[in-house]
Image (cartoon, rainbow, N blue to C red; front, side, top):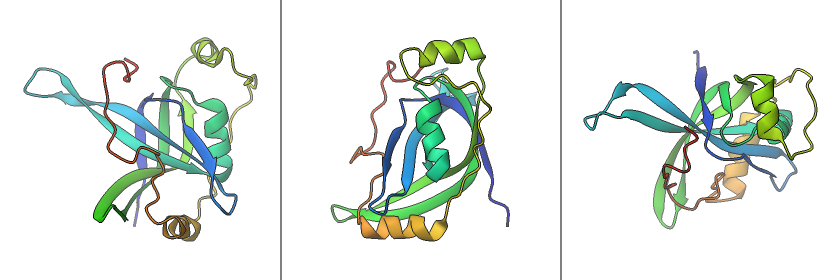
Length: 162
Protein backbone atom coordinates (compact mmCIF):
# COMPACT_ATOMS: atom_id res chain seq x y z
CA UNK A 1 0.00 0.00 0.00
CA UNK A 2 1.07 3.55 -0.64
CA UNK A 3 1.43 6.01 2.24
CA UNK A 4 3.04 9.22 1.06
CA UNK A 5 2.26 12.73 2.29
CA UNK A 6 3.49 16.02 0.89
CA UNK A 7 2.82 19.17 2.89
CA UNK A 8 3.73 22.76 2.01
CA UNK A 9 3.63 25.44 4.66
CA UNK A 10 5.56 27.58 7.12
CA UNK A 11 7.23 26.50 10.34
CA UNK A 12 5.23 27.70 13.33
CA UNK A 13 8.36 27.90 15.53
CA UNK A 14 11.94 26.67 15.56
CA UNK A 15 12.19 22.85 15.63
CA UNK A 16 12.36 21.09 18.99
CA UNK A 17 15.41 18.83 18.84
CA UNK A 18 16.76 16.16 21.15
CA UNK A 19 17.71 12.54 21.41
CA UNK A 20 16.19 9.42 22.89
CA UNK A 21 17.63 7.47 25.83
CA UNK A 22 19.34 5.27 23.23
CA UNK A 23 20.98 8.30 21.59
CA UNK A 24 18.76 8.46 18.49
CA UNK A 25 18.39 12.09 17.36
CA UNK A 26 14.95 13.50 16.61
CA UNK A 27 13.42 16.84 15.66
CA UNK A 28 9.77 17.78 15.96
CA UNK A 29 8.11 20.76 14.36
CA UNK A 30 4.74 21.90 13.09
CA UNK A 31 3.88 23.37 9.73
CA UNK A 32 0.95 25.74 9.34
CA UNK A 33 -0.89 24.99 6.12
CA UNK A 34 -3.57 27.27 4.71
CA UNK A 35 -6.53 25.49 3.12
CA UNK A 36 -8.06 26.65 -0.16
CA UNK A 37 -11.60 26.79 1.22
CA UNK A 38 -13.06 29.66 3.24
CA UNK A 39 -14.99 29.23 6.49
CA UNK A 40 -18.31 30.80 7.47
CA UNK A 41 -16.42 33.78 8.91
CA UNK A 42 -14.94 34.53 5.46
CA UNK A 43 -11.40 33.59 6.48
CA UNK A 44 -9.29 30.77 5.11
CA UNK A 45 -8.91 27.81 7.45
CA UNK A 46 -5.47 26.68 8.58
CA UNK A 47 -4.15 23.36 9.80
CA UNK A 48 -1.16 22.66 12.00
CA UNK A 49 0.62 19.57 10.71
CA UNK A 50 2.95 17.94 13.27
CA UNK A 51 6.14 16.45 11.82
CA UNK A 52 8.90 14.24 13.26
CA UNK A 53 12.35 13.71 11.74
CA UNK A 54 14.82 11.05 12.90
CA UNK A 55 18.61 10.56 12.77
CA UNK A 56 20.46 12.42 9.98
CA UNK A 57 17.27 14.08 8.83
CA UNK A 58 16.76 15.44 12.36
CA UNK A 59 20.29 16.87 12.37
CA UNK A 60 19.58 18.63 9.07
CA UNK A 61 16.24 19.94 10.35
CA UNK A 62 17.99 21.39 13.39
CA UNK A 63 20.70 22.99 11.26
CA UNK A 64 18.59 24.25 8.35
CA UNK A 65 15.06 25.10 9.50
CA UNK A 66 13.89 28.18 11.40
CA UNK A 67 10.53 29.66 12.38
CA UNK A 68 8.61 31.17 9.48
CA UNK A 69 10.44 29.32 6.70
CA UNK A 70 8.35 28.13 3.76
CA UNK A 71 9.13 24.45 3.16
CA UNK A 72 7.76 21.30 1.65
CA UNK A 73 7.91 18.06 3.59
CA UNK A 74 7.55 14.58 2.14
CA UNK A 75 6.99 11.67 4.45
CA UNK A 76 4.84 8.90 5.81
CA UNK A 77 1.61 9.68 7.64
CA UNK A 78 1.59 7.85 10.98
CA UNK A 79 -1.05 7.57 13.67
CA UNK A 80 -0.44 6.45 17.23
CA UNK A 81 -1.96 6.76 20.66
CA UNK A 82 -0.75 6.88 24.24
CA UNK A 83 -2.20 7.32 27.71
CA UNK A 84 -1.87 10.70 29.41
CA UNK A 85 -3.32 11.27 32.87
CA UNK A 86 -5.67 8.34 32.38
CA UNK A 87 -6.95 9.52 29.00
CA UNK A 88 -6.09 8.12 25.61
CA UNK A 89 -4.43 10.69 23.33
CA UNK A 90 -4.52 10.09 19.56
CA UNK A 91 -1.81 11.66 17.38
CA UNK A 92 -1.42 11.85 13.60
CA UNK A 93 1.95 13.10 12.35
CA UNK A 94 4.21 13.09 9.30
CA UNK A 95 7.42 11.07 9.67
CA UNK A 96 9.76 13.23 7.58
CA UNK A 97 11.62 11.50 4.77
CA UNK A 98 12.78 14.69 3.02
CA UNK A 99 12.27 18.43 3.08
CA UNK A 100 13.14 21.40 0.88
CA UNK A 101 13.23 25.14 1.44
CA UNK A 102 10.96 26.98 -0.98
CA UNK A 103 12.34 30.49 -0.55
CA UNK A 104 15.19 32.31 -2.26
CA UNK A 105 18.69 32.10 -0.79
CA UNK A 106 18.57 35.77 0.19
CA UNK A 107 15.38 35.26 2.23
CA UNK A 108 16.82 32.12 3.85
CA UNK A 109 20.09 33.91 4.66
CA UNK A 110 18.19 36.75 6.32
CA UNK A 111 16.27 34.22 8.44
CA UNK A 112 19.46 32.41 9.38
CA UNK A 113 21.32 35.63 10.30
CA UNK A 114 22.87 35.32 13.70
CA UNK A 115 23.34 31.55 13.52
CA UNK A 116 26.43 29.55 12.61
CA UNK A 117 24.78 28.01 9.53
CA UNK A 118 26.87 29.05 6.52
CA UNK A 119 26.62 26.02 4.27
CA UNK A 120 25.14 26.56 0.82
CA UNK A 121 25.62 22.90 -0.14
CA UNK A 122 22.58 20.92 -1.30
CA UNK A 123 20.97 19.02 1.55
CA UNK A 124 20.67 15.25 1.37
CA UNK A 125 17.51 14.68 3.40
CA UNK A 126 17.12 10.93 3.04
CA UNK A 127 15.65 9.51 6.22
CA UNK A 128 16.80 6.37 8.02
CA UNK A 129 13.60 6.07 10.04
CA UNK A 130 12.98 2.71 11.68
CA UNK A 131 9.42 1.88 12.81
CA UNK A 132 10.52 -0.64 15.44
CA UNK A 133 12.80 1.89 17.16
CA UNK A 134 10.07 4.53 17.00
CA UNK A 135 7.55 2.16 18.57
CA UNK A 136 9.99 1.20 21.33
CA UNK A 137 10.66 4.88 22.00
CA UNK A 138 6.98 5.46 22.72
CA UNK A 139 6.82 2.37 24.93
CA UNK A 140 9.93 3.18 26.99
CA UNK A 141 8.82 6.76 27.62
CA UNK A 142 5.22 5.90 28.51
CA UNK A 143 3.28 9.05 27.76
CA UNK A 144 5.84 10.37 25.31
CA UNK A 145 4.96 13.86 24.11
CA UNK A 146 7.42 14.76 21.32
CA UNK A 147 6.20 18.35 21.18
CA UNK A 148 6.75 19.01 24.89
CA UNK A 149 3.43 20.78 25.19
CA UNK A 150 1.70 18.48 27.66
CA UNK A 151 -1.49 19.88 26.19
CA UNK A 152 -2.98 21.15 22.97
CA UNK A 153 -1.17 24.13 21.52
CA UNK A 154 -2.85 27.53 21.62
CA UNK A 155 -2.10 29.55 18.49
CA UNK A 156 -2.32 33.34 18.40
CA UNK A 157 -1.97 35.62 15.40
CA UNK A 158 1.61 36.37 16.52
CA UNK A 159 2.52 32.67 16.26
CA UNK A 160 1.50 32.37 12.62
CA UNK A 161 4.20 33.72 10.28
CA UNK A 162 1.86 35.26 7.69
